[in-house]
Image (cartoon, rainbow, N blue to C red; front, side, top):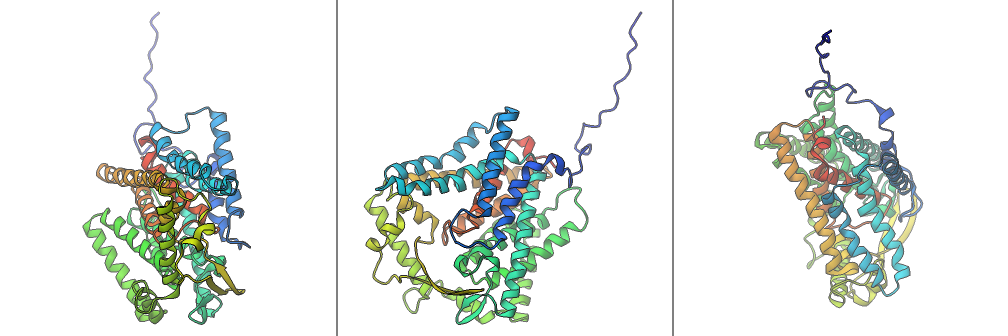
Length: 452
């Protein structure tokens, strides 16, 4: 008897519209993202010291352990060969600078810290993100953190309860306090860029309110960013925004620039929010030979000291954590003993200058040309890969272009900001998360990146 052939049931998995799981839900299957979300949000908790070991660092350690556990349980190949090479390349410089240091035991904590921020956390982010939805969840956490810190910072400016600046307690520092003066500005910049990327290319099937809400948040976060009086963050944010706008198309770039310009005029000109202080702060960057700002002259003195350390040991540097010990032997007499911090609930104290406030010069002085080449090679590969994949995604109409814009913006910001800052403080671990987001977009497989 001939078998009766019945036609197969219509497949619901074919085509991009037949997505069974809701794009904005499914937390039961996304629980591995919880340590990453905690890593992003926990820096908002007041922390007693400006060093590592805070709640966010603990959460990042949990994220790494969850990643390792999932790899052992699922028995999947952890990374592609390209991703392993790019993300693992900095280890060469870290290890060499540790073993060649004058005191390898003293350099060991630096090795652990560098591995955490620039290797382990980025790899964990790459492996824990399953698709574009996971990326958006982590990026949304950055926006939430920025809003909380931004509101706190504006309140500090309005009520005069911020950090001391030009004799007044008006500097917006959020919950990070005057000992980590760059903390609030950093997280606000992260959130601003993530919100701007969402506003420029809103995800498909997103709620109708998402795009205007993201646009309003991006513009509103300009206020606390301005009131942070952090020149390096201003420059890095402006550079990242310009790069992203250039990648979205001429018409949208011109419209967005007009909106940002109008917002700047209203905030600084119309309301007069710190206009005189902002202008003076911005102009102080170039006043190095006439009447320089003390922080500017100290910064350039430390840059010169870092260069002198590198010339003394050009290949491998003075060793991780070696800058403070070698600073006085290479710095000019014009370098002050420290910076004055006060306000935001903290008494006056003198904070020692233990780094050159330039990540590239810090790596060059402590790890030499070998370490700097390895680190820059890794970051350049991530940034170039992110831009390339963004251009491809735009041309093919992929649904995850918003993730590409956020990845390129965050990576550009980090690269430029490291010209004026280095690692240190409770927000340091967020640098690893940002590198991981950019690396996921640049190095993950096309099936994971293009998922809507």
